[in-house]
Image (cartoon, rainbow, N blue to C red; front, side, top):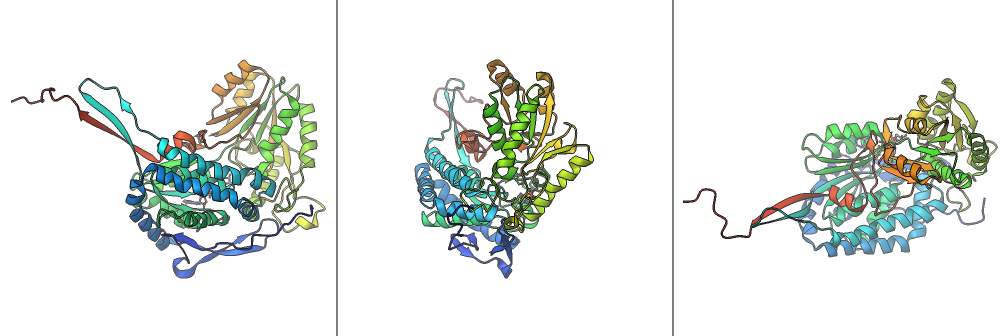
Length: 499
Ligand code: TAP
């Protein structure tokens, strides 16, 4: 372990944020949040019930007209100030996120916190640059479009990147003039609640932002059903995504779904191998593989497979596993015990179907310092494309390897799953790269890189990975209704019923 501090933040917010105030849940319910490194309880967090959702929706509904009527530039200024504050408090936020999720400090510091700030800054700047259009219609008429906020939006965030996803959801919704009720995952509520504190510090008007940790099966479901909520934006599993679509039917809510993935990561014979090996390791092992866009299917050309795997496995075994608060740590624990067990269960499923564990497949051995945590070794499994481990989302440091002979076969394997979120390919052949970029069934493709994200670039999937896009102009479209306005600008146009 490095000698740098692994101290937890001194102050942790654990109450619900409703109508600009931190409050206990109605009835006083709480739920513990655990440190995945050692299974200790970090703190008890207020756990919202349906009455709290009703209060939050009422607050957001009352705040909506004033917030929507602010000039776009004024709304943007709150987000720009928030982005600055996130950077100022970067170390503290990174520590909180690492403590609650198990995501290593080196990543929360370099990626999650800067990306959260970048996202709020991008949408703060976007607020007054997002325009309607003037449509070239027939002579005598002016037709233009207004982009109007949808109203109160419900946002449901998972546990794998809570800080980043909080910014992805809040940034465009607020810039566009909506008010919101956001539910972080019960497992990892702390960074979203800290964002609520920072929101209060920048003076966001009461009721515009409401944050309610609480169980998804009750209050998440209730939010999806709630007649006072105009849109639900959900990130999480495909099963829950389906339930949300059904629950939202009552008031025909708009729904945005960012669901699971099983990213294909294809390495061709002409690839730059050192870059492909390092990039493929990042694609799967970053955040312990708990990423919907993880490159969890490694599809190797048979001519380079042996050399690639030898070096890839050596790299996987060299990844420094440890306490996420230690800045030297490259891979932390999984976020929950139940999830750790699910991931280890997939090692058994692989073996039952004839798959071969090439490395990993267990908690770290001979590491008493990690014995109470939810750790899993970086795991590489050889399996057939039709096996369960090649088709189902494992969501852990678990990559499935298969080989191909021809480009057609590579594409068939890549497109052979129900998911279609992100996919990557490594090649020096430009024509092949663009051909695959067009042909891979997914919302995002990375060529000679993997898992790049940017607040300006649309993020989302197809098939069982959901629909709708986060980030960029696309996100502003999803958080606004377009209204078409017709004006008669020619007094001489004859009326339809001339008299
Ligand atoms: P989910 O159950 O989908 O959890 C995601 C979020 O949805 C959490 O905030 C959860 O709340 C909430 N939720 C749960 N049931 C709900 C319902 N009926 N209505 C509305 N919201 C509900 O995911 P999980 O069980 O934690 O993980 C299972 C698998 O989902 C993972 O193994 C992984 O494959 C996938 N997953 C994908 C993603 C992404 S980024 N696409 C993220 C997480 C998980 P609570 O957790 O507070 O109860």
